[in-house]
Length: 340
Ligand SMILES: [Zn+2]
View (cartoon, rainbow, N blue to C red):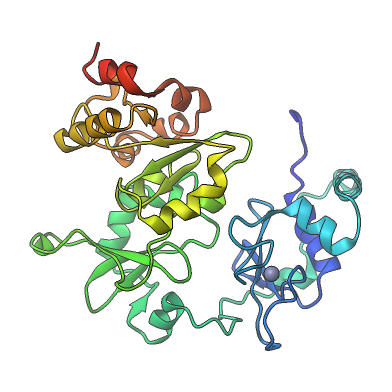
């Protein structure tokens, strides 16, 4: 697929053509009533989201075939047009060719010119409720913006398209949403040193962050503790801790046959507790795969640390070769861990 044409713009064009009532939200999303599952009973229920930058589709309606891990844009377009995937591809290619013949750099689509950031949904989810109640805001205070910029979080490779940071005005914390219904809050001020760094909502099962950005061509899933690290790693998923809950194990189960699940703790060479945790995994579960940090990265504590140090590391964590080379298990992993 080298020398390929980027079909994504043309995909959005087809969405407008095949799906009624499409509304553009921001620059990257198209929202509408899900034609795959028929959406909710209320006519105001619009749970289908097409992401232009990744060319993929997701429906928030549980039980919809496009829920859970979403659907590729091609599969979605085939389903709504009644065409086969090769036919959709052909259509995209002919549009891309026609476009390059026209020679224009950019064409404004009249239908998509309406920007609309309002919620178009009747979802009663905790994230939306908190924003509506005014408890959270997406107008981040300067010091929170600075925190995000310093860690380059806006540039992370694998942020889901819907992702957005919020600020909790009451608790004075950065809110990191995991989904519409789950989030974590992080301290961002020095004066909060006495508080727990992270807070999770009580009484809701903790999910996994990042399952929807998994590339099915790369047969590994890396389990990390934190979102701020996992969003840099190809097929990185955050669990909030390195001990999976029963619910999280269930979420992972559909992937277990096809993917190798790999534990990715913080750097074992610079963090004692990470060294201990890794050793524990290797000893108790000699067949489980772990990511052992290479010695050359010794000075960094975690993934985000490397990227803060230099942008060059961004591509390292996207490299299948690099990631694959650092995986080991059992005795081999123990030796690697001890630098042998
Ligand atoms: Zn649906």
